[in-house]
Length: 326
Ligand code: XMP
Image 1 (cartoon, rainbow, N blue to C red):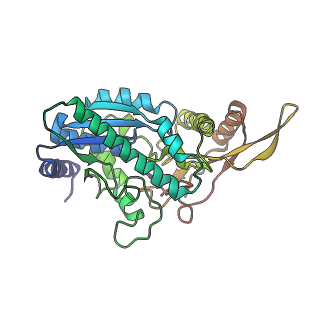
Image 2: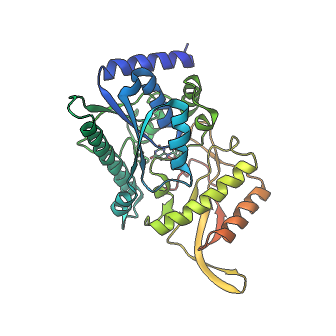
Image 3: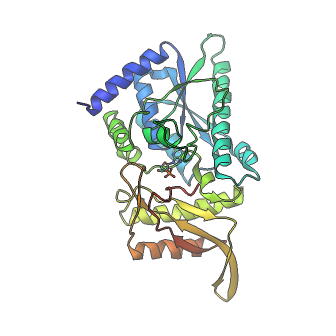
């Protein structure tokens, strides 16, 4: 009989056995998975864990502050923030293929961690200790969908599984590898993380980079960030956060359509709303959001976000569609 506390106890013991006297580094994405993985490792090895938050510029509005403020307040973990916005934009310049984007983002993530680890090491001076371990919040569905499970086809390279470079300099610690999302949330609560973190909706590690269909640029990220913030605000105001699994907002950056606003013709981009309901993200249904909520989101986005003149609704289940568009 598996209880949540027995999962915690077992994982803490396994982490201690794996890491020994070593030091670990953990990338926090702001999402529940890495937050819970880090909290587990923190419980196991205390301040021999340092968390690194990479601002890759593909974040949603307010996310960096939330990690720096809320998560640190809740856990007391040691956190270093790295501003890598330029680096990711440069690496993604000209790239439109979804898998290529994912692989680039995964690779850059690891390179930034390696740099952060080596900076920490330098800081630690001559103590002779090394950050040998990398903690990741990889879940069971990530493993399966990246082809690492029992013979499943490779559907997408989740950045934390299929996107890892061959010459990875860390040993991986992945305490959530056998768990589904709902189990991870229970583990998070068991570890004393606040509801606001534990019940955050999932957000992919590659962030807004895989929600811009086409090349990722700073200007497009700004558009999408603004549209996404409005959609989230309205969904929260309508009390729907716990009803839906998540609602990606996707920018069709290479598509333009004609619109009219005031007396003028516009020639802007569409954004797609992708509200989904799911138990574990392996399958999903599109959520029948109330029309008045859809209307408010649509009106606000087209009024407030320059260059977006159309809001469309994705009514595809998974399968055949995946939740994210890339
Ligand atoms: P898909 O698009 O495969 O997404 O139906 C299933 C769930 O996983 C999230 N997702 C990711 N999470 N790294 C992550 O940590 C990733 O690379 C990634 N890709 C998708 C997605 O938001 C959904 O909840």
